[in-house]
Structure formats: structure tokens, C-alpha cells
Length: 139
Image (cartoon, rainbow, N blue to C red; front, side, top):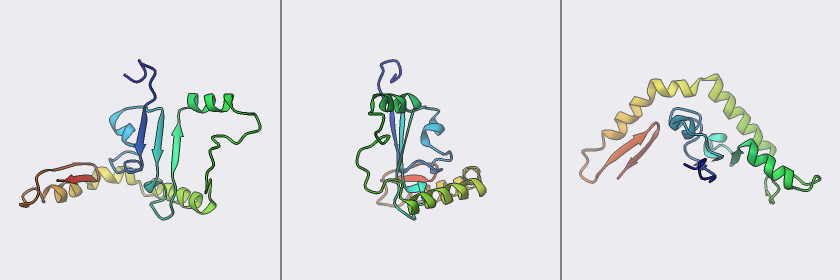
């Protein structure tokens, strides 16, 4: 629908990225290719505050092609842009995801989380329990 009507699709994956739904992003889980994805938390395992935005190459090229040739790409006054500690934490975290096969591990153990969350459904103050991957909502 967004592509048909030339509307940007932006996924806010600050919480859902990096395996919370069993895939690197919720966009991948749902088979969607958004134009932009925001991410944080799992980027550094929350060890150090960091966030990122992924943008489709057409968006990047549009911004860069219209910018002053001597300007900083995507310049908008970052306070802690590319802070070495946050970048090191991000690289280390991504290596752990890869080396430990955490996205595949989700498939092995995800049902335990689902069972634990849904075991609360009979509590007198619980109205509804639902989950997707390692995220749950208990009303």
C-alpha cells in the first residue's frame, strides 16, 4: 500500500529489533521491507545507550544528492554521534548474536517464554495474555 501511494514506511524497532521476535527485525519476521528502521536497546544489549536508523539507499541518495558537497551526511546536530564506546559495545553485541547463534536459539527456547507468560492467564487480575517471540503483553 505504501509503495503504491509513494508513502514512506518507517518501522520503530527500538524494542523489536535484534531477535525479540526471533528474527533480526520484526520487518523481516513479517516479510516487510520498510524504507527506514529505527533501532536501539538490543543494538548494544543496553550496556551503553545507542540508537541507529537504517534507511533505504534511495532515501540516503536523495539526502546526499541534495546536500552541500562538503556537508556531513545526515547532519542534524548529533550530541554523541558515533561515540567510540557505544560503537564498540554495538560491534561486540552483534558479534555475540552471530557467534552464539541467538536468532536460531530463539526457535529452540521461545516456547518456554510463551508458556511462562501464558501461565499467568488464570490469575484473577489478568484479562488477556498475548505474545510474539520474547515480547508479551499482560492486561
